[in-house]
Length: 119
Image (cartoon, rainbow, N blue to C red; front, side, top):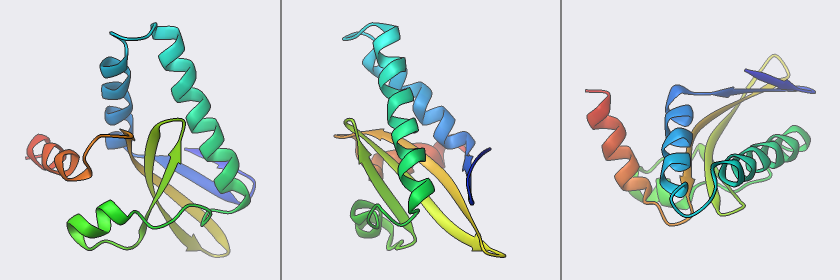
C-alpha cells in the first residue's frame, strides 16, 4: 500500500497479476527495461494525478457497459488503462487499483479470465 498525502493507494493482487501479464505481453516487441520503465512511469503518473484529485479520471464506460458498475474509474495513461475505485473514510480517501490493461484489451475478457482463475 502506498500513501500519497491524504490519499492511500492499495494495489490488489489482480492488479499485480495483470501488470505481470502486460509485461510478458509487451516484451517480445520491446526490451524488458523499456517495458518496465513505461509501466513504472504510468503508475507514477497515476499516483501523482490521483494524489491531487482522486476523481480526476472518469467512470469506466467499458466496465459500466459490461457490468453496470459506476463506482470504478478508468485512467488512460501511456497506452495503459488503470481501473480503480475511490472510497472515503474519516476524511481520508482510499484508492483501490484493480486492473492494468493495454489500451486495446477487453474489460469483458479480463473479467471472464479473472472469474475463471478465481474459481
